Image (spheres, one colour):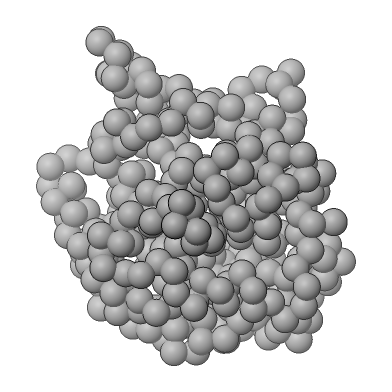
Length: 334
């Protein structure tokens, strides 16, 4: 489906930052490029999955100039209970830490609290505290988050089976082995009233990198993720082996062996089947930008995957994610 059909194009998981290849490059460059692409490909609304407060401030400053027709919703750093590996992760070890994080989210005028806490008691406290403050919770990045309710959201469907040390390959393989557990967790969240982001194609392409090489517009990733230039090099005569090593070094991407690929394909089939079991709650989520996912265009690709799987991507669940906020959403509209 496309914007030409006069249907809103809303992406339930977008990042608004990349990185710079040099300290002399403009700090605002990657964020401005993301916003430009969202506007160019007709995205009418996007939910920012989790970012630092500094990145959200930068997005707010750039929003009107670069994507004035795209409504932006979002939250701050994702709360985790382990040593962070990314700047957008906030390490909480006690209930007091969570209370401060929720107060900060209120002060920053966001309506989503991203939660990726593995400890069930801490996670439950985060959800309860967020709800008392009028915040919605998005479960991000690892396993099950207890206590989700009707205004809440699972950031990406595959992640309900994610473990801390997972790679995209091992996560997709786990769906080959434990799909029943994944469906049970998804069903529990949906029965509690939560919606579920899809996040399908980004995971597949992180495993089967070659499939993305013929995708259009990958060069548009380079202002956001400079090492995406190695994707072009993969297609050049004599450049494949060098580029493959660079992608593994800088992005952790590698081709699976034949046996690994077979298990991953089985996991992919199970993921699509799992999506069908919670179809009424699934919301398109591209998780762009990634090394094979261009912001804006990746949403069109995700919609094609969902349509091919027999899911109607424009369901009431999508309206709940973007319109059912307990208080006015202000990210990107100040």
